[in-house]
Length: 184
Image (cartoon, rainbow, N blue to C red; front, side, top):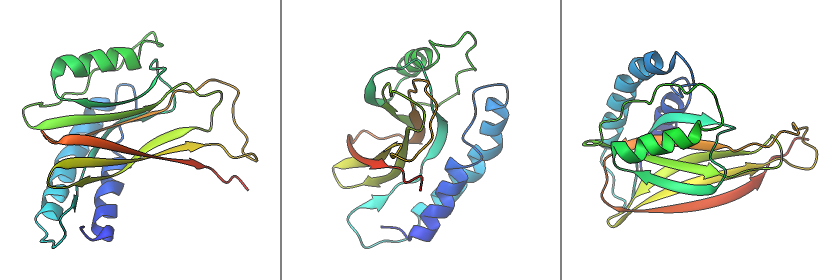
């Protein structure tokens, strides 16, 4: 696998500032951070490795604590039609939808994970790592729940995380790890 410091640097760029928030800034943040992040991911992918599996860089598209998508489900989106349909479902509980992020499906694939309806705030789902093997793409996901000492809102939440990666035709396998937060 690639050096974890390099991966952390790429992910901090891809999952930090450029995680576009629903609203007007979506397009400008997308444009500002996409090119440098792709270049960093390409540079990291050229690093020679001896392992049979390789960590894959990804770009954050959108991560929120609530949506109109009530089911716990994972997606691999490869077409504009599938993408449009998922976007409509995500924002079906709001009056105003942000514009659909433009994805070039001839070169890119969307991976999305939804935690489903949760009884309160304090829940989160996050794509942590992608590892490509000879035959598959392994997606490692953490689903967080609030611990006993956590203070949460009483509002139902429906967390999700959406990323984009280089186009893949490999079988995508999701690995979910559930964790409780320690709110001390």
